Image 1 (tube, rainbow, N blue to C red):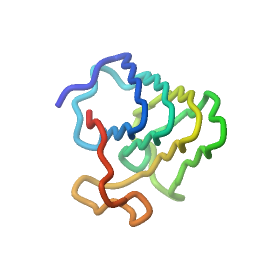
Image 2 (image 1 turned 90 degrees about the vertical axis):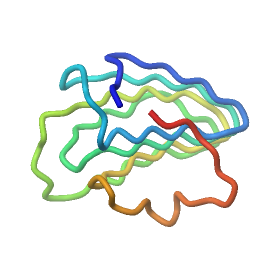
Image 3 (image 1 turned 135 degrees about the vertical axis):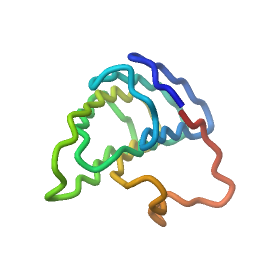
Image 4 (image 1 turned 180 degrees about the vertical axis):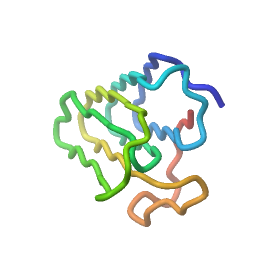
Length: 113
């Protein structure tokens, strides 16, 4: 699946899940903007991807689970996440690697890129 240079997502009472591990990038640098209310933003990228997280989350957390020792792969994502009552989570996984248990939530639905 191809990714746009700049993408925007809005969610209310639901999650936005973006799995970029096997995506075709238009360039090495992409920008994603999310706005949400009562839902999480979940971003999956390859280890070595540079992720810049910015924005404001009211009554929620922003977490980047950055692995140590992964060589840079030349890809950069700028994620601007603004929202309330939800978390922003970035996780680094290889294609086919299982999602972390804390991402699995019964009945969770989301949008995949």
